[in-house]
Length: 400
Ligand SMILES: *Cc1c(COP(=O)(O)O)cnc(C)c1O
Image (cartoon, rainbow, N blue to C red; front, side, top):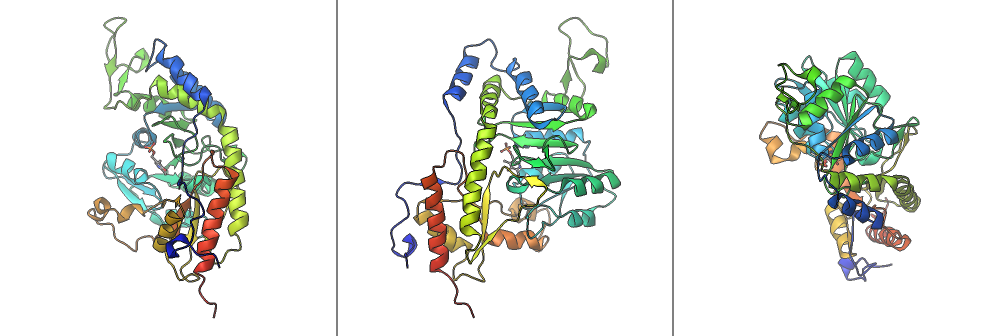
């Protein structure tokens, strides 16, 4: 039997592969250089061009580009009117920002458990968390698989909650044939370099609702408006603007917008390649004892942002930590998405305790995110498959 490198065997490869990497080509570079030579580095024509393109891709009526995915979540919560004393339901199996956006507004994040097969927020758990104080649901499309939007919309409508879809993973995915981004009350995107398309740092909020749109623009730009119809006092002249709310500077630059416009041209290509890599992983791991896979619902035509496996300790003599370290010695550098948000000391100090969401906690205990990005070669994919298979076979538990 092939020995894992951690037991003195030969690593499957000599150069390191990481779990994610951006893909930047000459067209991207030229797009950025063109802005650098133009009149506007920020507040220029690239922003509306990008927003139009995001609308075209998703079918949403309005798009508001902003500084990053976290800022997008923050202004979405502000536009939803979330304030002190409110409760906002979200999943624990996400990046901290999905809970922090409620805290920014003085509201309390409430964690609803996930489904044990899809790892997405469980509509039944959401319903059980609703109280008189619940204002919104921040639903994450974990790994890029759409959450069960129809069920969640029903719960939100019944309880007068705003549905904010944290779509940081979801660009390129369709739910029941419609692109995610055009379905929830508001959907947020992130364009961090490990996400499917990137501009370094960047984000956006998509909505079909004009009132949210107006507020999102306002909160992105200091709460300042030049629109006469929104101003409270008479204009002093052509230069006049008014601050009518407390907003932020969450703008995206034209440099970033140009990069993202160019990246979005490649979204179909990125999406296709990610699907191919996922198909190879699924084929290789489907029957591999000791490895659990995320289930895909038929309603989601998924562009995966992450590919996660679960190390099943009941079938292996090695746990997640051992498996993770063994992969690193094969030169496969993975990651874990995510540490349940309420495990963090900051949340613990607010009173959240282990045991709150047992399904998410159990999933976390086995999770590993394998490399998944556009630039992976067939050989890279083969190396990951070889390493995972080698380690899983070496550590099989004797069946009783
Ligand atoms: C990346 C991410 C964010 C935050 O996006 P940034 O652009 O890094 O601020 C929020 N939620 C989820 C689920 C993410 O993966």
